[in-house]
Image 1 (cartoon, helix red, strand yellow):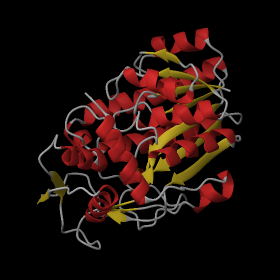
Image 2 (tube, rainbow, N blue to C red):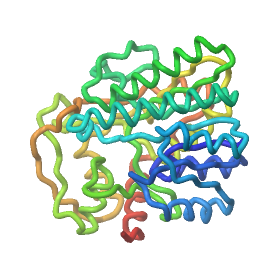
Image 3 (cartoon, one colour):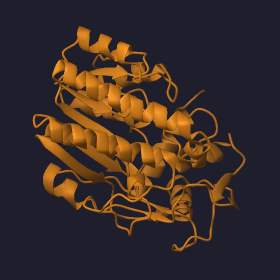
Image 4 (cartoon, helix red, strand yellow):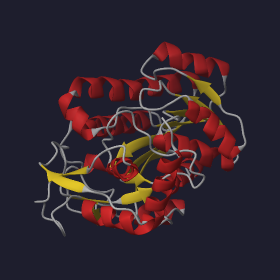
Length: 331
C-alpha cells in the first residue's frame, strides 16, 4: 500500500515509516519540521534501504495536502502531525486547538474527496482524563486535564462521526502511552528542539552533560514513591503497533490502547536508566506541572487479541537504546 504518514519526520512517525517500509509498504511523508529535522528523512531511507517521498508542508493547509493526492494514489493515512506538549498546551491552548483539530479535519475532507477510506489516528491516553487505571478502551472519555488531551478527544469524535456517516470508512484510533527509546541502530531517536518536555530525552541530556540536572515535577502524588506513574513503551514496539493496526483495519471505528500494561514511576525509570547504562542522573524535585495526572497505564489486551500485537521490549532495553542514540546524536 501507498501510505501517507503525516508528521513522519518526527519521533514516533520516523520509526513507524521504517516499520512500514520493512513490511513492504511505500511511504509518503508530510511534515512541516516544526518538531523534527530534515536530516531524519535520509536516516529513514538509510536504515530501511528504501526510498520515501517527502513533502515539507503544514497538514492544516488543504491546498498543500491536495497536491499530494493529485500526484499520488494514496491507499491509507497514518496521522501523527500535531503539537504534542502537555505543559505548552496549557500555556498556548489556541495554537493546539487550531493546529491539531484543523489538520484532522483537512485530512478527513481530502480523504472523502479522493475516496481514501483507511486512516490510523495517533491519539493519546490523555483522553481518559482521571479515569481509574488501568485504562480500558470501553471507558467513557472524561474531561481531560489539558488542551492537548482535548484536541485528541475532539479529533477522535470527528473521525468517529465521519465513519458513522460513511460506512466504507475504516478508522483506527490508537491511544498510546509514553513512548521512549530509539531505533537499535542509534541513528534515529527522540531529539526535541530546546529543553525536552518528555522525560527520557531529559534524562539522556542530563546524562550526557548537556543539561545540569533532571527536574522531577512533584513527589506528592498517591503513587509508589510520590512521583508520577506512566506506561513507558519502546518506540519500535509502538511503531509496529501502527503497522498492525493499518494491516488489520476493517470498516468502522476501532480503538486500541498501545502500552505495556505496566506502570513505572519517574524515579523507577531514572534508576533503571542508571542501572542499564552505569551512569548517574542527578535530579531535583520541583512543583507539579500543570495538566499532569498521578497515574496512567494501559490495559493492552484488546490489541493483543484483535491485532496480534504486544509490546516486546523491556524498560532496560528502552533505557539502553535511548542512551545509545543520545551518545551518537549531534546537533
